[in-house]
Image (cartoon, rainbow, N blue to C red; front, side):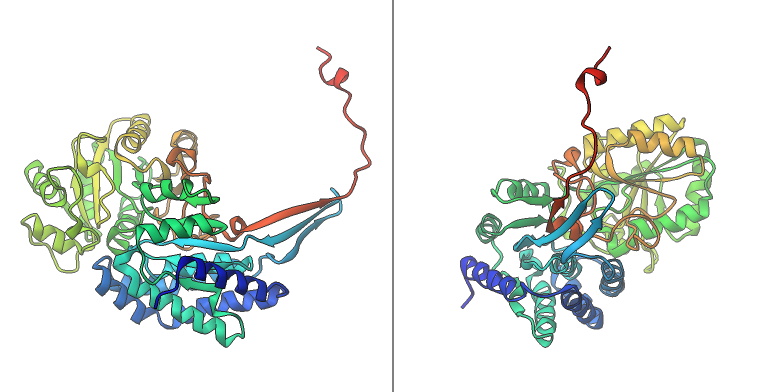
Amino acid sequence: MALTIDEMIARARAAVEAIRDYDQAQVDKLVYEGAKVIYKHAEELAREAVDETGLGFYQDKVAKNTDTPATFWDYLMDKKSVGIINEDKATGTIEIAHPIGVIAAITPATNPNVTPLGNFMHAMKGKNATIVCPAPRAKKSSTHTVNLIREALEKCGAPADLLQIVEEPTIPHSAELMSKADLVIATGSFGLTKAAYSSGTPAYGVGPGNPPVILDRDYDLDECAKFSVEAVGSDNGILCDGQNLFLYLQEKEADVIAAFRRAGMAVFDDEADVAKFREALFMDTGKARPELVGKDAPVIAKAAGFEIPADTKVIALKVKEVGASDPLNEEILGPVVSMTGYDKFEDAVEMAIRNMEESGGIGHTAGIYSHNEDHIKYYAERIPVARVLINQPTPNAWGPKTCNLSPAVSEGCGSWGNNILAGNVDYIHMINVSKAVYPLDVELPDPAKLFAD
């Protein structure tokens, strides 16, 4: 018989109490073993995830299940998160980490293995317990993931209940879990984020993605095309930070299309052909057809009436304009990128902003390929997103090795996306850090001097 939410919460609190006196090395051992077991079962979990959900690309999921444990552990291994984590004698400050307690992790069908794992690793780093409520269509694969980590915990002599999973994930069970936990990490739709913030529990939610990417005049076309295949095609485009709208200099359109085709993309620039894809991908209501979400590019092409090579990873569709007038400008969650030209760089920036404001993705991620520092800064200052990736694929899974972003499975979109955090949800967001402060031998400011004018 499935445990009730109250019973799961009670077990989680008991597990947290059981490791109350664990030191940093003991905690890190649990984080490491949790990562290691998923790495070792990467292939079977990937196969199970694709078969159960019908989303994504098997080889890419294998890569996720090997690279995510390695990247997270490499990042977390030398971080202090237990007890005194910092002392600054110059300011007389001691920082102390405290566990939050029980963390509710609401996880999506798009990443049924690595999202539970990533949430666990960040939470465990702070001596917290995690209860996962998976997407219903991914509960088998997510449960397998959680059970493997539970076995690893037990082998270390730690309570398995430091990680649990809701056996029957329903909206009422999710709501109850969020209301009774100490912190919520909600990875999914805007509706889920709103529910998390309405639960009465402190929460980190994430907004939907729909990243625009600008190609500047001075960047190598073939390198950009190679990166674009990775950005759009990875795991069949179901990553929320994957490139969705590509903006290029209008006068270079023929060269851009040629570069995309050399990189293996199937590019459709005829308006009648693009219309067939629009009809195939979206219903009369304007909503994406669920049966095509996360499917291989040849499957999507066939639904639109086209045959493309079986090894094609990405479909590029030329659109007339950005924004709400064309559903192809929305987040498609497939290996499809919309593309259109611009006349001036400033126009491209305005187009990127308008597309997010009208078609979604505001606050999440944007990209730019450029060697013009003035253009890069102009874009970064104006685009309303938490992450601007420069000269790299928009879903950069290898941060912080290849860029200064922490590895994350939940990416906050700031107030633009109705989120509390503009940045990647990290282990530091899953601990309470208190400050013990000594008195400073300083002279207090004289208000009369400060405001003398």
